[in-house]
Image (cartoon, rainbow, N blue to C red; front, side, top):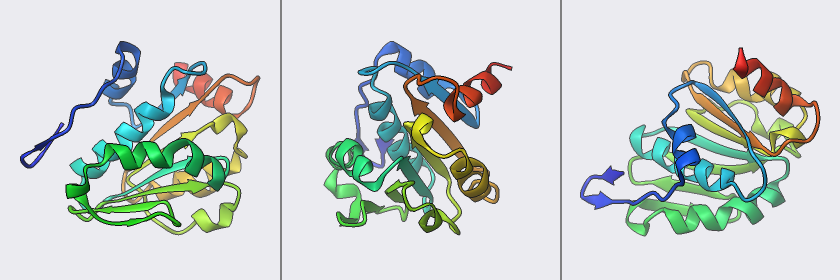
Length: 170
């Protein structure tokens, strides 16, 4: 990926590239542990933020603590400092030079997620989230931006992730 004169190399394995190159607006990735789901997701968040100036891009996990533990360091290591205007570690938020914003959030305080238009969202460990997070909170936030979503998680029985996977097969 190129951003002006800065070239960023993205390292993904073959199956991650299959997901990356899928142009569907809503995608579901169900894979086992160590597949690299979060690595793929963080790379996509960054790519979307670079390609769409002044966009809002979110990574959601079941809890704020999980977002910080799982994805914050990965995101911080990925983004070159030349592309960062401001980094808010407490808020897990990065503002890029093109005006885009990447935020990591938890779904443990659902009401704090309401009210913002989002361009791209990753729902990590979606199987552990309440189904209303997508239908009542996140999905409406993508409407006015025609935003995209990537659902990722490991199989855990018949739940919201399973339902989304089955729906995508149709």
